[in-house]
Image (cartoon, rainbow, N blue to C red; front, side):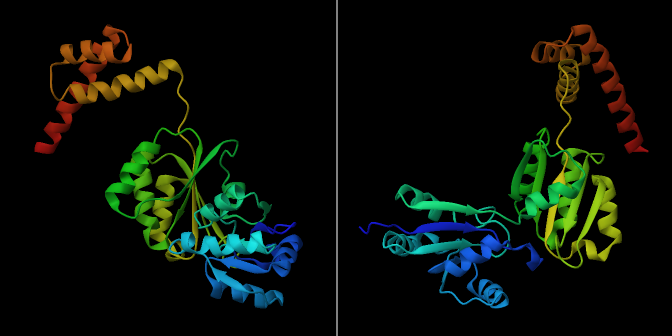
Length: 293
């Protein structure tokens, strides 16, 4: 093994505006012995724009495991490899994890060359809390799977960040509104850092209406930011659980039995449970009567 190993640089590239490429990122690309790129054609265009010419190797989700031994061998011989994705920071909904993991395991240096990311860009201008957030990548494309995933996230208190394809954004907002409630605050950022950058802000109901009224809403690259669920106090949590539990039990048993069981399950007072059960039962009766009319 040579005295000097190579290294892997994880390089962030612009998500739209070429002016966002840092001087350090340009220098790292210029010095690379090979650039591992998600799409060599797209990266080739970037290099041409920068006035650079470097060897490229494709590295995407379908060939990453097969390509890694070759790249590791080159770094063990002293080569400098730069890893880039199509846009933004590699590994964030992009390939590269296995390369980074195996490079580090081989004792080869892995360095970060930070820069643009649609995730942090959208968070910075969404007008929603940023102290804690959860990046969820792309939601499932299939309707049932997407709704199931959103149901799991409905009580997540952290701000949520998603990527979404333009042709699915309308139905995804509909599903978010159904899962999180139409009043939950959110923002949709499209074409970040590009000429037609637009940010739509409002409740999920507002955004659904905006999407229906604006043809441009479903164009370009899209990042969705949704406020987290409000954190309930203990009393509010018990009240919320009591209502949910009674709603299920009342379909199967009388108000008194449902109240007794719900009180045991949630820790609520039995009198409170019974009073709410009567209200919910009456609401259900009125709803059925209206449906028959």
